[in-house]
Length: 83
Image (cartoon, rainbow, N blue to C red; front, side, top):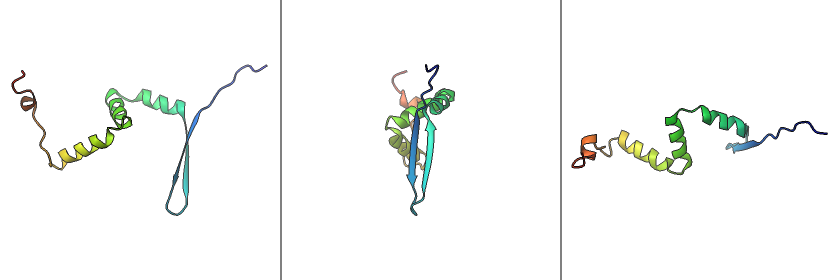
């Protein structure tokens, strides 16, 4: 009779380097989940945006703002005529 069985789920990531040297990383799903649970609200929102596929667009927009290619609107300009 089996008293208890613990199922361990792992994610294996293999990244090949130019010279054929690989890096193997094993991450337990539970460890990833615990790390996400410990994130603050802002970091969870950032992670959600990155995982949703909108991360590249947001990164591009942030770069445009920092490099002053675009000008952001002030709160007053944004809500002009509304408030």
